[in-house]
Image (cartoon, rainbow, N blue to C red; front, side, top):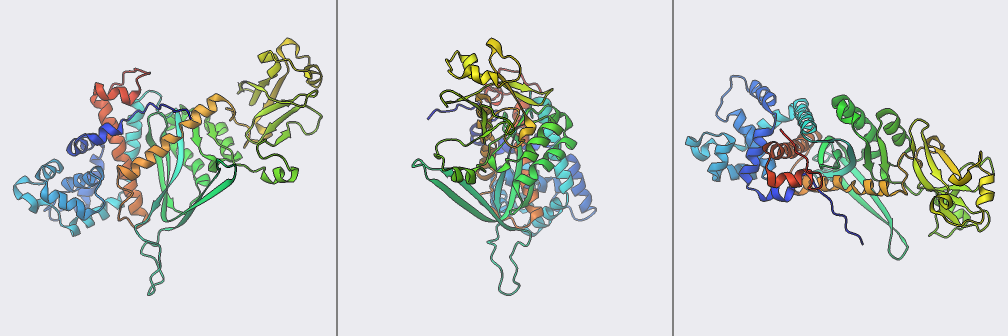
Amino acid sequence: MATIIHQNLFAWEEVEGSSDLYRLQLVLSYLPDEELVRRLEGRRGRGRDTYPVRAMWNALLAGVVLQHPTMESLLRELRRNAELRQVCGFNVIHGSEAVPTPWAMSRFVANVVKEEALLREMFDGLVERARELLPGFGRQLAFDGKALPSYSTGRKSRETDETSDPDADWGVKSYRGIGKDGKPWKKLKRWFGYQLHLIIDAEYEIPVAFEVKRASASEAKRLLPMVRKLKERHPDLVENSRVLMADKGLDSAEINRELLDEHGIKPVIDTRAMWRDEKLEQGRDPSRAITRCLDPDRVDTIVYTERGSVRCVCPASGEERRMVFWGFEADRNTLKYRCPAAVRGIECQGRRECERQAVGQPGTFGRVVRVSLDTDRRIFTPIPRDTPTWRRLYARRTAVERVNSRIDMSFGFERHTIRGLRKMRTRVGLALAVMLAMAIGFISQGRPELMRSLVGSTRRRRVAA
């Protein structure tokens, strides 16, 4: 199997290998949180200032950066680590007595949860800053959904007949494929909780939009609303977007149509096998692709597969050959294909008969076939799925899976104690904001040993703050 070498913008191995306090200081320096902190100070008013708001906010960020699974774990670390208390801003004279009580910290977190709008603005501000710093940011987008199990098990109490997390519900994801033995397999994943829907920049592996819904929410129904909101908040980013990658669960004519027609984004989405019944009825060999006539109203040799592969059937030998893709004609909204015999110099016994069925006189250029995207918007896309360009772009979809993995491994979502939709949204928003702040911090500092991995050695572009 060929190994794909992927140049990452962000060298998370180096980030996670750096000191904990350095990463925390980086986040505190580059997170645009002043308006949020002032709002939190306003909520406190003239009440007791035993535990300063700014120090408590910094401590909350420390819990995200240092991967503490519980608030009690963070508070224990603060009590024993004087240097961490100092970085967060607690009074060093008071020692461990300066650390908030669990009750005080819990009440503070409840106030942070109420400021969801400001947290969103902070995240959007970081996205805009990344767009200013990084060339081509947002040009290649990727979308995926991620399971976020609740701390609750989902079991109902005998007394109240309710779960300990009434906001959550059950989600199911199915995975299908063909094994090495040629037999189909299916795997189901069930969880109780929520689902993160995430759009990232696939080149730099940085989040640009997110939402947290109940686990039962459909990924396919959430992509377009997220793209519309992204266009409202970051119009320049969407205007410069070229492609969006997603897995076959998002295979839809509606999604393909709106992405291209309304937003100018070319969909790079795998297809689901929806012609199975036809395959069984025809008794075809499962290893061969089912084809349909491109124009069922006339007798012709041009057919296509469910993955949008346009082929010609030699009228003399019956051999199928892939037509050669010759580009997307945006003004006509059509895909242009040429005769493979004419392009590659292949001897084809039925070429003349095939050309007689074409409109006009092909000549030495060979027969040309134009396929309108409106023939089937689910199957025909501006970048055909059987081209090297599509395969190269689709391989970059794994970037969103790596970001999801970091959310679990680096930001503590494998082990957490979160219940409730608002708390989950707040915690996810903080994690993604911290991820962005770290990236912007390293870029703005211009560390040369890290910039090669941030931007990619093949590009060698200078990124200035």
